[in-house]
Image 1 (cartoon, rainbow, N blue to C red):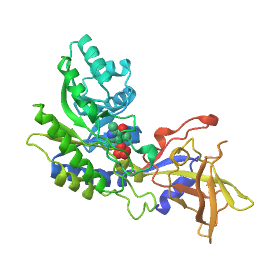
Image 2: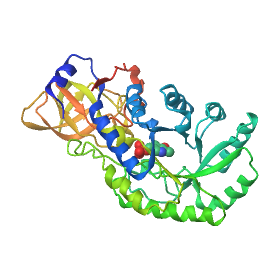
Image 3: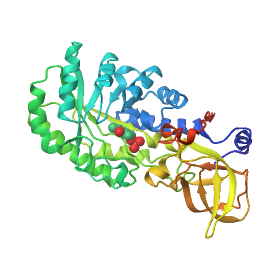
Image 4: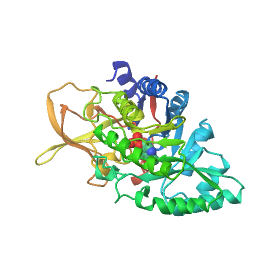
Length: 382
Ligand SMILES: *Cc1c(COP(=O)(O)O)cnc(C)c1O
């Protein structure tokens, strides 16, 4: 949890702010790195989970590549020192400007999500006399068994190319001389806790890979995306995601040919637990049926609860009173601006510091200035 010396540091700072425990981040990175070496897997960090430059610097030191979903993420990755040949660019709606920029930077590959996108990348690559490497993002129709807003690999989702379109994809590719198909890409969702889902993904990927090899198409890269979940309920019980089980499943069930490279794009599982949103209690308000702890952080700092009803564990860092129930709410003029209902906290008063835990992924990156909110600098401990 939090050392007393860290809590004293918090007291001197203007709230709300993000706090990052870099030692924990490095423990996670070392674990991923060790397993990736053991199994000969390549890791690309999904920049969208947290693009804070201080965090990226640590990830870069671990030697991972970058997975980007916008032109500006490609730019951020390269500016922070990621080698272009380790940068992948995914996303359903890449604009011409973004594609041109990525071509200019000579990134490793585009993860293509539609037939039209292949045609456009081909055309833009032709203009600058390049051959762009592409992976096809295929929708494997595997249910990630996660929240419906973060499921991406079902037929009804907007992501990826459906398997029924693959014959047309192959036909189209034959006419496109400025793109080269080298890989298959899959990403079925996020915050996946059921490890059987990953086994199911492997089996489907094996089938799809065979479909290509039966047609004489050699696949150099298999990219399994990200999606490994973290323990939001008890962050102190499980500060590091279960990378061991996760990678072992792919090592066991993914059929891999000699020379085939296997890639992962992990975001949340690497950064979620090292971040907390630190906030002060502004008022305690006794409602008719419930007590409200009104804090100075809101959905503008951490949107996940308002966006997909996510749970974040909350600690009061400065009280050890009797457990009492509170609805912990922010100051923003929206009823969804609520971090938790009927949360048991030690008796809480105006001025107490609270930590909203597991906020390192999809937290700071989604900050907005709605209500013209101030944005405070993050704070880091080594
Ligand atoms: C968001 C995303 C990831 C990372 O997902 P996590 O659940 O954060 O691990 C990986 N690949 C792609 C294509 C993504 O869009």
